[in-house]
Image (tube, rainbow, N blue to C red; front, side, top):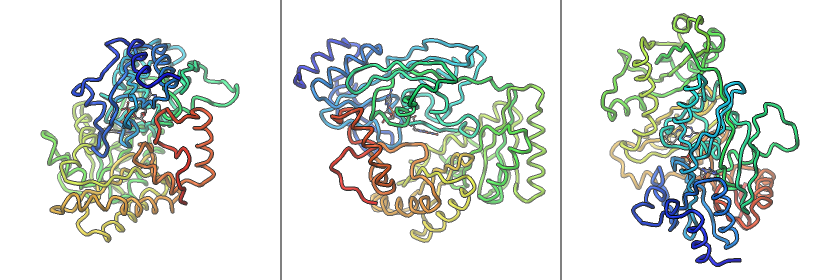
Length: 478
Ligand SMILES: Cc1cc2nc3c(=O)[nH]c(=O)nc-3n(C[C@H](O)[C@H](O)[C@H](O)COP(=O)(O)OP(=O)(O)OC[C@H]3O[C@@H](n4cnc5c(N)ncnc54)[C@H](O)[C@@H]3O)c2cc1C
């Protein structure tokens, strides 16, 4: 067993000056947290340049009992990459090579530090699609995406991050490397280990590389911003659109008028594409790798029929790529603009798709009754049964007084989701933020299973401690 001081010297020797950050200004981006709810306290960031270096760093930390916090783009929304005092942040940013693209197998083997948008571009260069897409794609890393099992706007068609992976390379908490970089569609040789690490938010190991699935590149697309009668009509429109367009719906995103108003107010250059105000909007996108599908007319016909049925109130169908991008901008800006409207209490809820409208309706009435003037900013991936049910403070209310009610509103909203067999964290994970919810809503059996896995892989609790799963000794409520 080496001491902590020895370990830091050893790690510095492994990664060299380029891989060592200890200056306070340079540390800042690694310690800040996206939502400003937490702040990291690590004194050192280590940036290994290869899997082998990463493994040696982990072994040095393990030998000295130093806690490690894996970090990708640091865009996570649950405080998973927040570093406790005395820990070392291991940043994957320098592991950013695309090791291989295999267009025939429809795969790409990439290192964990690759920026998501760069991988989308690399796939396009090979006439393929890598479909994972989310508003943080310009800075989040694929390792972080897999560690959080990210969702985003293409889940409806292509699945979550974990569905897009065939193989993984992982540095285990003791410094061993598991090379599971297989490109196989079929491989029933024992337990599916890769799925243990995806969604584990860095608590079981350091993902260093992955084999990703690619898809045929879409050659035709149609995009519309649609005003629907209400949230129930949104669910009806999705079911119809899937049936009437040959299942070409790849994105189906909801946002209410409160969200749109915030975007129009705070994002220069944005305009409302429709003449009148409506309560609920859907951004719908159809895509296909075919060139003869006529998606724009299929979408027009579908929306016209839905309008006759009273489901759709109005719609703008994009006439150019620029217009489609402008519609997307309205949706993507929603995550960011809420911060200009004072305190926001956030929820990332999933319920069965058939109940998503009922959830939004019921939860909206409930929180409005609890606090008149509260502004429900409900948006997100309703095509997956997932809504970001965010609550902006009443105009003029004192922000700290509003945010002091965070726990109370969480419980109201999460209880409604739980009653509908839903989840309190659809795609943002647990991190530090939702540990309490984890203890409250997960059954003792499920929690104990998770702890058993954590203890088996990381018996000394050195890999991202204090995240996702209570390690032991904590009181469990249920
Ligand atoms: C504007 C905005 C929009 C967003 N939209 C979405 C969305 O639509 N869908 C969605 O799912 N998320 C969304 N997010 C959340 C976030 O972008 C994702 O969770 C993303 O996948 C995190 O990637 P990252 O590289 O930034 O990871 P980080 O924030 O650095 O880390 C996240 C977690 O993963 C762990 N981790 C990171 N890299 C590794 C690794 N290589 N090995 C092991 N563990 C690792 C960390 O320890 C931490 O627990 C959004 C965030 C923002 C700011």
